[in-house]
Image 1 (cartoon, one colour):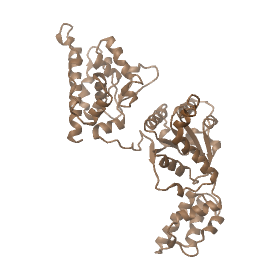
Image 2 (cartoon, rainbow, N blue to C red):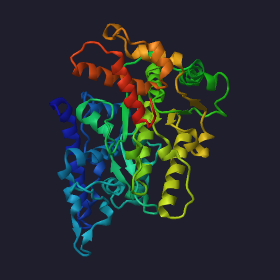
Image 3 (spheres, one colour):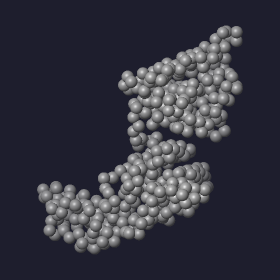
Image 4 (tube, rainbow, N blue to C red):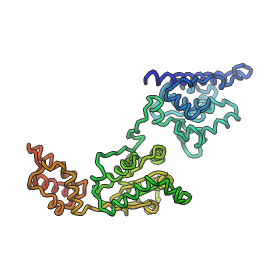
Length: 449
């Protein structure tokens, strides 16, 4: 962290630490001690008028006041100055256990104190019930801190006090405040989605005219949805989200089409890793999905669920706890997709694998068939663009007519054929290279060439 970025953060954390120390002194003072009457609000906040750091920018942009700045800084402390919270580990000598009013929780690997809403209430309100109720409004979902995703709340088990929710700072906010950068989120176990791009263009996409027309419906909605909803008076009855199912054999262009839709409309496409999303721990699936949907809505991403039937498949008869949990996850996901105001694309090899409850909620279902001979010819010629690298015995019209292969399979064929030519020291691919590659591809798919 450079000096310009760290200076104001340092001042803000010093201010927060001063409030923590003052609240503890006040809390443990005798009733007749003058310290008991000290108001926390009298501790002056750092001046921001001349500052130009990411933190001060956020403070000024959202006009954050005393309470909001303290909450934001409190959420930052575990990441930037965890030792400032060690005082909360103080035990109640009479009971031999931590003080309930301090709140807090302990992470699985982090040994320090992690604040909760209760921690913030202790600092800002102390034992003042009226002030406590006032501060609790900051934890409403429409408050500035939560609505703008400057902080986040993570609730525990159902039925527990709402103020036991963990007070967190979203990773993107932490990165911006500590580095000044707003990078695309990276794939991780906590963010099981990957930003997908392609160097290919629309001209490289080989689909039938009917399929391209269906795909154009999706791009038209993205580009003109506001006009359609407002100018045509549909907003009262039509939700702003758009859900589409791509289905068909592997390698027929479903993922490429989703990526190109994003490139064409200037929207980022994130492919959801369903293996990471689905957790053996009940409730973890909903948590993982919630984080992705929240960021996607905020940044206007297109969400792409590949091999969607692994999560969106037909629900089972709930005969045990695992079945009930799985059905609960599906119901949760169905609701999030239903409420998502952006574009969700699901891809599956078989439409029949998708739960009927999902299918009814698609605005469009687009079938990606195996390419016809004329389309396969275009695929062959698109893949092998350097014709000088082909031997005279390579005839793409003949190959396209003879072998029924999807675009993804043809790319595998091309890769193998070129590798074989390179290994043999040749600068051209001949017919036998391609024939052998086709045989291997068919064998891989359990077919005969």
